[in-house]
Image 1 (cartoon, rainbow, N blue to C red):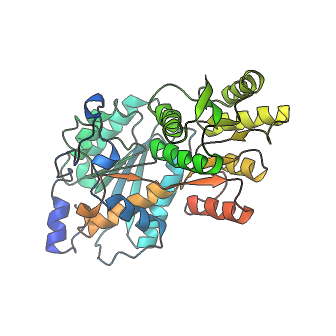
Image 2: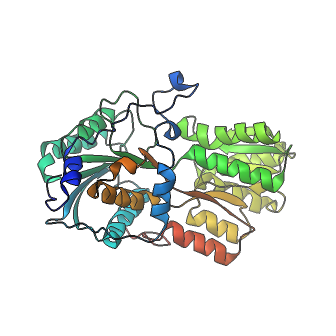
Image 3: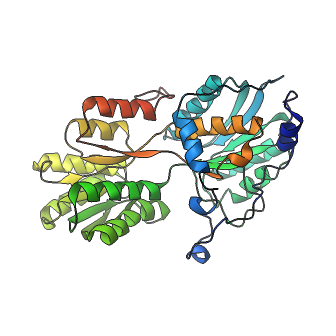
Length: 379
């Protein structure tokens, strides 16, 4: 670190050292390791470290008690020029939590769109070239494999602590792991949803699915859910429609289910857009009371649909957790406690459902967006 001159000798030594994850990965092996190019969170996190950071993120801030002669300098390289408000919300969560922690900072944002891979590479090179100007860099890759070399380059830069946003799959072939990965796990959400649905609806249920696009996200959100309910509850999937994460795809898939697969009493949707299309089709057919339908993510649209009685349940992300956890991790680095941190942070996911009261849903929404605010962000 370049701008911290009042830390203890031990902390200063830790901060000046390489930020590479010091332990040999993985901490434990899994049977399918050879089939993946990445590690999964449970095999790279020290026991209890994730839960500890989740707890710190979800409770009131404890002030940083050290001193700073100058503010931290934080670079953010991410596709914040795109439609998704994930980046803007977590930027707000980051800086507001830093304010609560009493940490002084300056930020510089390097914005791009999701498809501008080369621009992100240019930004990464610029931050490496000017590394003496920065203490931390937060990198939100446009695409993980495409930006792997840039993650490696940033993480290996002496005196620069690198965090990665929106991915939780540390790549095996990185020469230098970043100091932390921060994301929400679709697999974790799928298993939370599985357990809830089995408890709510029991065993031997026939259902259908509006899936997204073949790939890792849908494999987790849809595939892991499908495997879990089959294994634990003997559920039978009757029909799987690939709606490409679009509202029209959810509408069309649900119309097909209602017309051709009447035995399906549950429709599992893999994102908000398809869930809204599914709800629209059910309302048009007068079937909302006959079908148990799910969403994904706990967005404002989904929560409004639950309040109206049109959607039954959704795995809801505590959306501001990524930014807040990053701020808590920065504090841990300043205090020389980085060894306590998980390599991979996963934001909390809980199930929002139609049996909750309005006050309970409102409270959940306020917690999820406690820093960035409930409702649409102003652009």
